[in-house]
Length: 107
Image 1 (cartoon, helix red, strand yellow):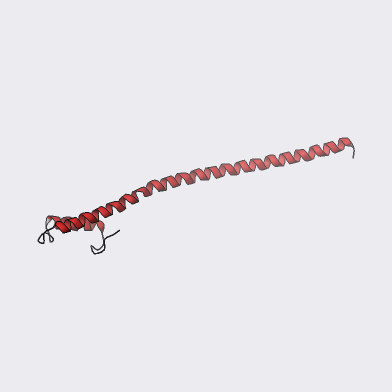
Image 2 (spheres, rainbow, N blue to C red):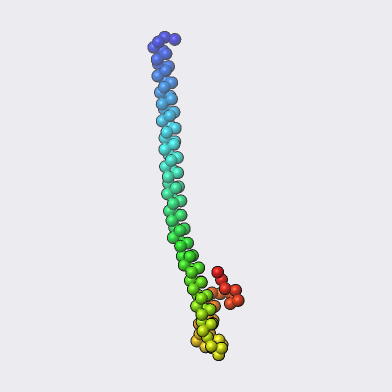
């Protein structure tokens, strides 16, 4: 092999290596873009889930407040009001909102 043929072989091998590396970088860039796209979708979905579930805390607080109102109405009702009086009606209505048995208040 002459010196000229050696340089030509080295040049061909180096060119092939450069092309392979360029193709690998292209594949990596495509994969990174896909990952970025999926990460953005996941972030958006997470924000929507957080927005949709923030009301759960307020529902729990409302439930506790309704139980307190029901208990206060029952405590303030006169014995003759418990069956059809205004405070008895309030206690019954709140119990309907709460659902379930009035013996088992919800948390």
